[in-house]
Image (tube, rainbow, N blue to C red; front, side, top):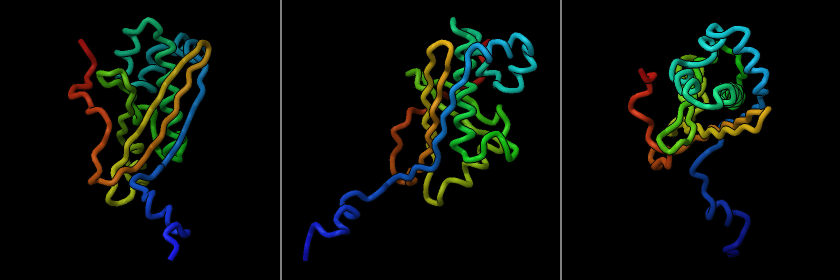
Length: 166
């Protein structure tokens, strides 16, 4: 019996997680700025949650902040395998930061329903988000993975209060 036979790696590297979706997007900061200038609150309210708007308005690079969140929503819709179709709305995907600054994504509505469809029984979905900008571009990558329910998560806990600050 050959202990290093063809099934050896299957025994050594037992997968405990599954990649479910991957998306990325490159957004023009200047184009987002022109859109904000042209449509103002109508655009912002259609695309961004009150929490996202509150956070962006307090940042020195406010337009770049909006552009990164736009890119994250586009990337998330791609990772969900739908793009912005099937009833998924911009505000169904919300970007926020945990205390350490790490960006996270919260899904509601149709986006959350699509995530549930993608997640195998006995697993829970984890959404990883990374954002960056270098004028004139904002870039985001979203990876959705599924972890077994009995495996502890390495994710930071979500903040308790995601309401806009007064």
